[in-house]
Length: 276
Image (cartoon, rainbow, N blue to C red; front, side, top):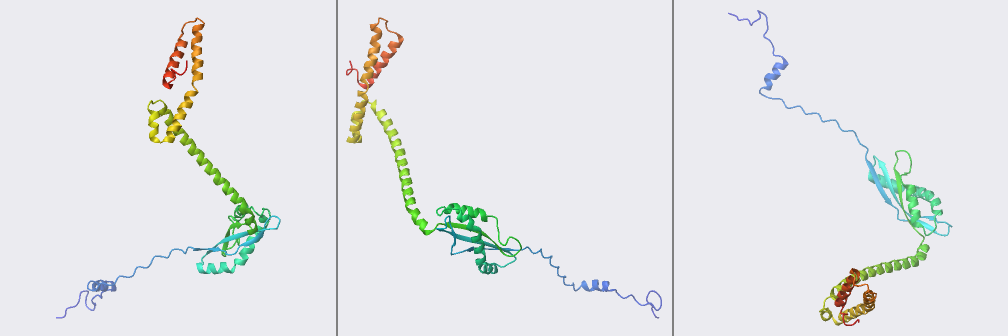
């Protein structure tokens, strides 16, 4: 007995499709994972290279009167896009003469407007002139900016040396005198407070010797001089008090107050017996 496959005689069994076969095969041998494509590269950003070029030799420009020269010590700052630092350095060295010519051309007129000993004024003027400028002024080629330090002619420096020596000496003497005056003022105030506190103490004339004979002698003279200036005033006050009695006006509150003050002052200064 012949068994025909389903679908009738002459019908072939279905052939597994590629997808079905892959699924069957993958059940036993899973395929390797496909590599993930890399992310897109970021856009290229232009890199900026800079080079600071310190020129060893100065550029000479004439000062006012053309008898002396100013010495310009120039620093160039070179900048370039998409260029290696070494290449920028080589180009800067190659263009050094051209850059120095530009600086000298720009500086001559300003230098001739300044006197030979006004190097600091010229330095400020030149740096203000060069600030924010670049050469070449346009384009993408390497360009440079300028910073200048100015020194006077050596002959001018020798002429200025005695002036600055005298000025330095005067300023130092002035500062020294100010320090001495401040210290003297502080010392005077402290000794004044000490002497005033000691004056009212009956044992101070003896205790002053504990600090030294020199201080004791100064303190003794201080007390005597202060007491010798008082009798005339005391005499005048006594006459004022007695004058009220001579006029027959009788004691008043004013007179009694002055009399009490006078007696107190005499006791404090030991003048009760010295002044009649």
